[in-house]
Amino acid sequence: MIPVSATKSKIENEVYRHRDATDKEFDDINAFYRQVLDEDKELCVGAQGNLGTGVFVNGELHPDKEKVCSIVSNEEISL
Image (cartoon, rainbow, N blue to C red; front, side):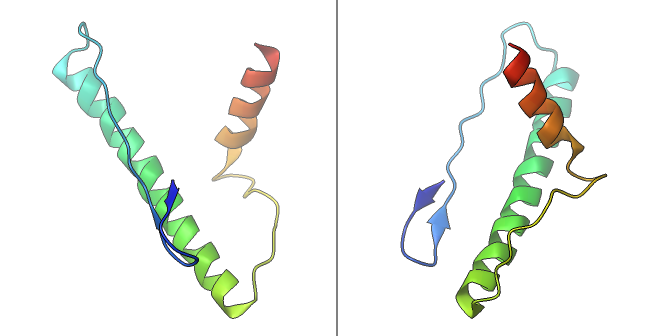
């Protein structure tokens, strides 16, 4: 995430492929990665819109759609 202005950011990513990964393995993980990026972009656009109108409210994570956030956080803590 790179801020460009007060209301605009740019996302740059690099994707690397393990030399032993099959085409299917790479395509599957890359498709998942793109889905996550698209979801994150949608959330950022919505949050920015709310910030612009002064209606931004920080809330809890969605219990079904954002479980991975707490799983990843717990995994990082246990490492």
